[in-house]
Length: 541
Image (cartoon, rainbow, N blue to C red):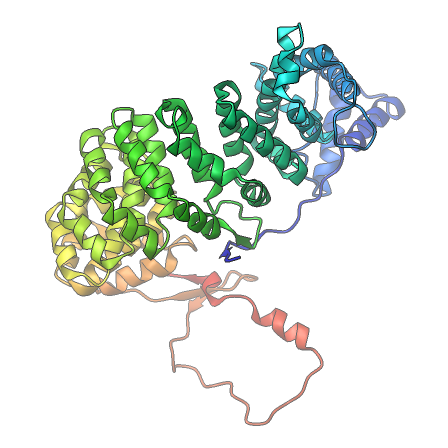
């Protein structure tokens, strides 16, 4: 399986269980005679000082919150009891369907409480008890059996299970914890239930299934892999191809969002991503023409069009996909969509994002520079000056268009790109991705067309680029842009221990440390550890 390298994962966080936290609070109250709020505050202080991450813990400061959580816990215990059959994953031979539905509704109400703090605590409580995989067992229930029951509420059990799982897996770090503990077995049961709903054209189940698939696969690499393993891609492609699904606006919109989630490289805790493998599989199943058809069919529905373009952009990550998109009219379609709806932020963002990926190809980037796409992109960037993603995508597209292409540089300058780039630097001084892409765009535009540098300098580019050099993400790009603008710039190093600033050594200015005599050493690990600090970590100017 071909994988994409992802950024290195950070150090593992220290975490405790909900039981440990609750016992500490109880000990504070009983042994030190503290009020509940004082006991909770002290417990939080103790664990935080030890470097423990408490984002998965219910911290109820008030007694009323504690009572409310006890009620939620009682409903959770009752729900688990309804499905209890020991350690087996299968549903019990005889289980309380009505009681299960009542408990599910109570749990969903707790997870979606209008009080955000209560909802977060309920999510943490349920996450601490592995609720997400208990709920998943309900997807084994056959719809025919449920429908045969006299109580119509029982039919909602499987759909309620979707809603509870989505609410449980959403909402910050607590939701992330539940996503991470979602078993492969649970994903298999979910996909099997969706296949049954698809064959029976059960829209009531299939729509929330697509929404849940998006949530489960967002920033969760293992879930993406398991979703694909159990036939998830065929469900997505089928929803775009077959009627009545392909004619339903809501189905298509949610399908595109799920497709984007499955093909995104967004779980930076992992060293590798299977996004490129999933992309190739989708392209092989005909996803690109289906997405283009959806764009045509729902061209007046801006949210659905934006979702389809976003999914298309994720597929445009290799030469084969880019060429197929171009040959089937995808570029013209995106240009027309932006021309008609440049004022709509989501559509503008996804259209320009698609231009960004397409511009990696030299031939197609010139087409985009000349077919009106560049002019529309700049118009949208001016309109949405406060939208970070639109600015980032637009700047990256200009940087790619200008790379090794003097004619494209002239075209962009004539369209007013200089002012747009400098304004983005001013408006988003704290957005590191914008700063980096703006520096790249300037550097690529002036490296082959030095006369363009005067326009940037007159517009105030030099102080803006020096400010961009504050960030590690953009220091190299800012240095290159200042150098090509013929500004007085030099590298300095900052000692990470003392903070002392000194000029960086230039190539050839220091004597070589080459030793003609080989000296053996047993401290190989120490030598490697001492050498792994990248020089760019201390560069500033």
